[in-house]
Every structure is written in C-alpha cells, then in structure tokens.
Length: 208
Ligand code: ADP
Ligand code: ADP
Image (cartoon, rainbow, N blue to C red; front, top):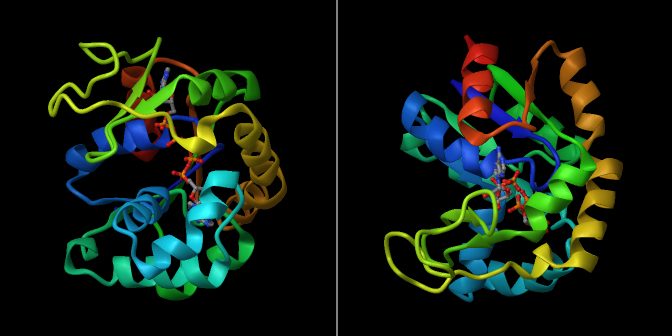
C-alpha cells in the first residue's frame, strides 16, 4: 500500500500514521521528522533548513524532493509506505508521480479552529518523535515522555506566529493538491475531527 497523508498541519497525520504503519506493515515517512533529525544531528542539510522550519515556511522543492527520492529507494519501502507531509506543492506531487505510483491519498478533513487547538497544545519527545497533547493526549507524568522519561518539548513552529504562517502556506501551496489528486481518482476523505481511535477506524474504512 503506497499512500500519502494530506491535510493541514495539526490534523493528526503523524498520530494516525503511528497506528497505521503497524497495521499495514509499512514505514511511516514524515518529511518534517527527517528534517528535524537532520537539524538535531547538525548535518549540512540540517543547517540549511533550520531557520526555514523555525519560521514555518517550506523547504525548497529541489531539496525536499531529493530527500524523499533517496528515502523511498530504501528496501523497506518496496511493499509500500505512508508519506506524511509530502508532497506539499504541485511540483513535489509531479516529482513523486515520476518516482512511483500511489494507491491512495488520504485527505484529513478538519476545521481551522480545531487544528489551531491541536497545534498550540502539541508536545513531542525530541529523541523518539512521539507526539502528545497537553489536553487531548497528555503524558502519564506531566512534561515527560512515557517510555524514556525525557523532557517533552514544544516545537518552535508550534508557537502562535509560526502556526498562523503555516496555515497560510497550507492554504496557498498544499490545499490545491486535493483537487490535483481528486482529478487522478486517488482522494479518500477522512473525518479527522474525532478522537484518534475513531479517525483510525475512518481511515481503515476509507481504504477498504
Ligand atoms: P506539520 O505536520 O505539523 O505541518 P511537519 O512536521 O510535517 O509539520 O513539517 C514541519 C516543517 O518541515 C514544515 O513547516 C516545513 O518547514 C518542513 N517541511 C516538511 N515537509 C515539507 C515538504 N514536503 N516541503 C517543504 N517543506 C517541508
Ligand atoms: P500532524 O502530523 O497532522 O501535524 P499530529 O499527529 O502531530 O498532526 O497532531 C497534532 C496534535 O494534535 C498533537 O498534539 C496530537 O497529540 C493531537 N491530536 C492528534 N490527533 C488527534 C485527535 N484525533 N483528537 C485530538 N487531538 C489529536
């Protein structure tokens, strides 16, 4: 199963991908996670993209496309993959179409108010990438990862100014992909406004 998770920042794509990757037995490829791990490890790519991520803008297409091309060429992607956060622009979608076919593009449907509430309360474990929410999915011990006990962080781009910018970028650059993939007959709409286990049920039904 080769699929793309499409939807605004904060729609719950990463949360549902963590469930779907085990269920479907395919890797979860988040371009945001790949960039953040490069930033953490201070690679050349990480240094190049650090300020872009902090501001909530998009990394240039050429850089992002090459990173994804290398990742999906790895052997674990032969049976399929979940692409989360890619493509985000029409040129990225065109480049992906040249690399591989797709079985489905899942559109996570949710209101702007709900994504703002989800993003502003999001916390994550910096080493594992595990995602929490201060109200909707709190850790067992406040501020600590459930498994490693590490301090959770708030991403720089989950602060108010960057959230606003990211939502504008989504509307201008990424939302047009819904029509792009509808025209190709690939779109599966999923109600993402409900609790995670319900969203996952909606996803399984949409893909069945
Ligand atoms: P969210 O799902 O909360 O929007 P991500 O973790 O997917 O956040 O992305 C974080 C940041 O990484 C984006 O704001 C952007 O700067 C960069 N990024 C991730 N994916 C892409 C992409 N496909 N094209 C360009 N930039 C990207
Ligand atoms: P995305 O990858 O689309 O940016 P995330 O999976 O990181 O979104 O989720 C954004 C925030 O919303 C996180 O804090 C997460 O815990 C929370 N969240 C995710 N799914 C739901 C849901 N169905 N209901 C309530 N909160 C959710």
